[in-house]
Each structure stands twice: as structure tokens, then as C-alpha cells.
Length: 212
Image (cartoon, rainbow, N blue to C red; front, side, top):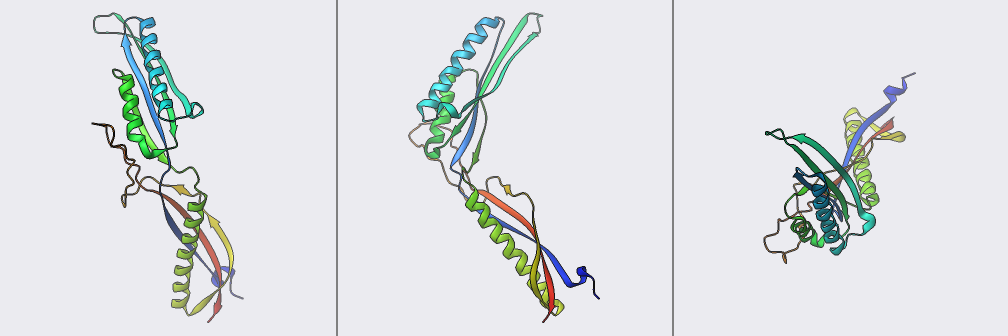
């Protein structure tokens, strides 16, 4: 009797689904140096409060604001004098990308000196449909490969006996297209592009082989 491995075929398939982002995480902060710790804390606190108010004014909910950094470092400068560096950062979840350019630029303007921008990351709030589409494409890819190989071997595909899936991967912006988050009302604003994300699925499918 032939072994099970001789009577089956296992083929891997991959599928990709393009996804338009509908949310973003923006990390903005304040960092200042001063020989006076109290003054540095006060200035940083005031500037961060201005940043928070600018975010809220642009529609960011308070529940979507998270402090991700709060540091105080002491050191000595080249003259041996004590110095303090005070820094803080907040991560804001932006759920309306239509004016993200304006939001980022207005927050930076509100902070002015000492402003920091630690990146903008785009995402999709609901990935379920993209995951399904990527899985379907991955299965079809595996099926087409297996069908071709079976035909070359002079046999046909039988029933599916096993399916395994690797953890799906929500990809970075694709180079294929770009969805601009428009805010042309802000003169001199740095443009920010949301891009196009990808959801990728990778599976492995095993079929039995039957005589043609």
C-alpha cells in the first residue's frame, strides 16, 4: 500500500488584500533643557497642555490620549553646571484622517520650541473583511498551484485533508497607490499621506490525490 505522503499533496498559498487606512496614531511630545528643574517642569507641562488642547480641538477624544513618556534627566554641562532635561510625550489616536495634516501642524505650532514628533502610524479599525479576502486569495492561490502540479503528474485533486494558517500580517503602506489626507487650508503645512495598507494571509493546504 502506498504511503499517505505518496497519496497526498501539500501546497502553500498566499493572498494579499489592499486596505485603505481610516485611523492613525500620532506621537507628539515636548522636551526642554534648563538649569532650573522647577522652571523646566512648568514650561514642559504648559506646552504639553497646549498640545493636548490642540488635539482635542481637532476632534481627538480624551480617551484616545495616552501618555507614553515622562522623563527627567540631570547632567552636567561642559562648564560643570547642573542641567535638567524634562520631556513628555502623548500618543493620540486620530479617527478622522480628513484633516490629519492640519492636526499635526497645529499641535506643533501650539508647542513651538521644544516640540517633538515621534511618528505617524496608519491603521484600519476593522480588519475582518480584509482578513477574509486575503484568506480567500491565499486558498485560491494554493488550489491553482496544486491543480497544476496534479495535472502534470497525471492525477487529480481529491478532498482537502488539512489546512493550516500562519498568523496574518497587516502590512505597511504599499507603493501602489496613495490616499492623501487632505488639509489644504493650512498654509505651509507639512503634507501627510496615509498610503495604502495590505492584509496578507499565508496558508498551507493538503489534498488527497486520485487517479484521473
